Amino acid sequence: MSKKQQTSAVITPAAKDSALSKAQQTFNRLIKQIEQRRAKLREWEAITPGIQDKIVDELVPLTKKLDAMLSRFVHALDRAHSQKGLTKTERGLLSAIIAEIAGNLAENSTMRRSRRSTTATPTAIWTATRRSSST
Image 1 (cartoon, rainbow, N blue to C red):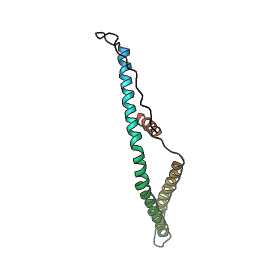
Image 2 (image 1 turned 120 degrees about the vertical axis):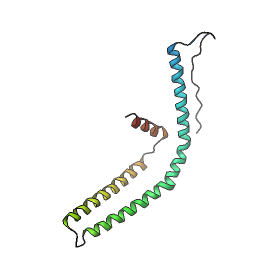
Image 3 (image 1 turned 180 degrees about the vertical axis):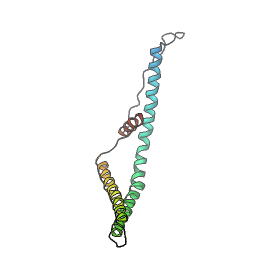
Image 4 (image 1 turned 90 degrees about the vertical axis):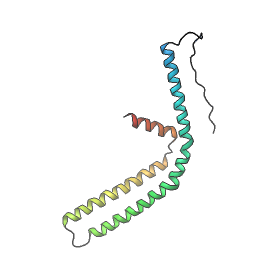
């Protein structure tokens, strides 16, 4: 879908030898900033599909592979937990490690499911980025 190119209003002096007032200069400067930010937004919107494709093609499979490996690791730690020869302190440490990794796996899985149900638009991403950078 093609967006209509917008033109911005700019104040020009009435006569060639007269200068703009401070308010008019400020207005023109702000209009220029808006134009620059619109251009940045258009650039962002142009590259977003490529980034999303790269995420789907490369990052998602790697994340699934990592989750599978961590899951196997948690099961191995769980088997080690029940073996003889471990002290109570070592079993407690293993329990804490298992709980931490398993909790992270569950949290990550829940976050990925909730992200799939909402589509992030470039504008929403830009707004969230601006909000987080201003704090």
